[in-house]
Image 1 (cartoon, rainbow, N blue to C red):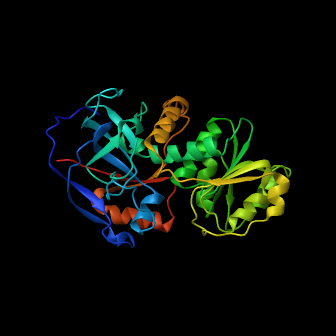
Image 2: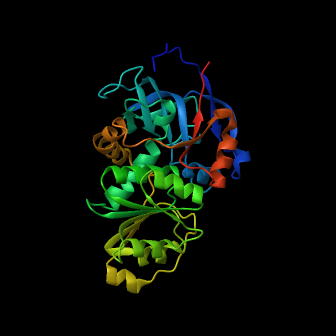
Image 3: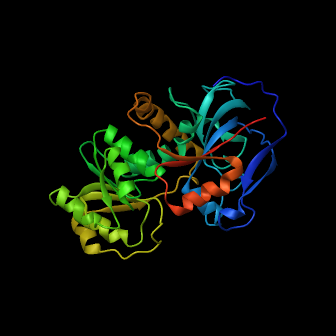
Length: 338
């Protein structure tokens, strides 16, 4: 990853969704190279991650924050080629990965400097682009909101997703027993290879498997991207004082709750979204990741799981794959430059 001469163009290729809909509404077009504001770095993007919030934005359900770019994309890797470097640990030419507020599906992207991290030693552009949105989400929800403590057990729904595969690896690296659900035997085998106790939700009742494996004690934290009727099933497999953290509603935005079990087990149900949070919150997360997670990555205890890579021009195919739910790990875009 050697620095390039920074004779920057005035236009770039970028992706937006002029209308809400399926993958076919995504448009690759010429856009102006963004101009960094105070506190921002300009990144020459080499790879970008595809994430479920991008799908929600494409469908018209998750608009970017006020003032943010309408270009899709929440995580990137690339080179620092400009911006406000004063007071940051970065220099021109540095290889970074970053959690963006938007704008990642483009050849250039402006990102608050405090949301950028050095690429862990040994990772390439693609592997690095698989980290930010995934790890910011995992750490924020499992350890900060879910308060997963040493010796506690974790259940991850959607274990074969980008978030799921990273949550499994990180929790295992930190010494936790991890259960994870997936929708096929192939996907269960993949998450078991990462160290989880896999559960095929199409052929098994996850609450029954957990009750049996834990001798009725249950799990302490659930990371749930399904919601819907999973809420009561989660409650039934929780330990006393357990915490359920909901980060998406792929199974439906409504569900009936058994308050009797909620009361007797003293269960906490919470949830969050990351994109709308203030930059200072994301900056604090970045510092935690660099302190607690980057060393694990550099020692090889955590490896980004990459399912497929598409050129920017095939972004609609990448989204179609995300919509299918067939991936194991991350789907990425690879960007090229003249």
